[in-house]
Every structure is written in C-alpha cells, then in structure tokens.
Image (cartoon, rainbow, N blue to C red; front, top):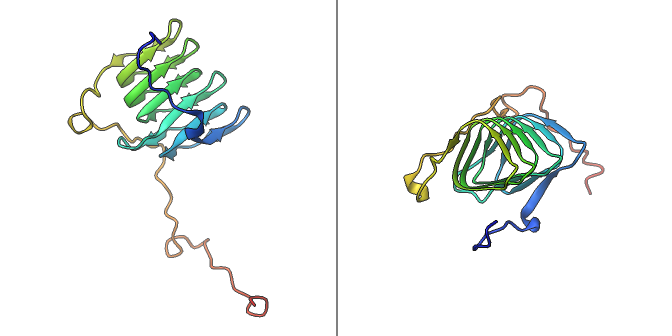
Length: 160
C-alpha cells in the first residue's frame, strides 16, 4: 500500500471458489485458498499454522465468524474476524464485527463497525490461538453410527 516490501498472495493459490450467485449455508473448514464472490452464511475456520487464505471480493459476502491466518476483504463481513498473520482491507470493505489481527493493511474508505484488537503479536508460539467456533458439529461419517449408510453390493458377474 505504501510501496514497501508487500507480500501478495498469488491467484494460483486459491483452490476453492464460491462464485457470484452461489450461496452456502454452514461452516467451512479450510486449509488452502478460498475465493468468495458469492455468499456464505456460516463460519470460516482454518488452523493457525496453516497457510490458509480467505479472499472476499467486491461481490462477496460472509455472515459469520472468520478465523484464518490470512484474510483479504473487498466485500462485506458481518461477524468477528480473526487473522493471526495478516488482514488486508480494500477501500470497498465493510465489516460489522470485531477485528483481531497481527498485521493490518487498510485502504482509505474501508469501513469497520467494531473494535480493532491487535492480539496476535509476535511469533506463532507466543500468541493466543484463534477461536474455532462452529454453528454445528461435523457429522460422523461411519457405517456403524449412521443407519442410512450402506455398502453397495458388488455384482460379481459384471466385476470382470
């Protein structure tokens, strides 16, 4: 933003896209790059020591909490944001919620209705962990616990 040594995230590092016009209801757990051009109604959760990046474009919207090491916002977020590495806010960013960060880059025009908290300071081992709040627990995917899951029979005549 001010001409220094700025680290940018390459577009090739985004392996998941929520396209414009798409809507997702529910929490997402991620470890790579997530580009949001649509709408997400739920929490976005990544491990602190991952290289996960959440990027919300001008048309993107998240209603829920975001916990990811790197967050880039051009769209709107209603909910708290936890960025333990870096947070970039474009001039079109609109946030309603508290923002906890380590490094912050904010363009003139970005709007935040909430508190700024510089709590992820220093080395990874010396700072608090990001919260991993979920709206629902992950379902257990096991044949023993879910009576709806059945093994498909193998037709031995056609198996050759």
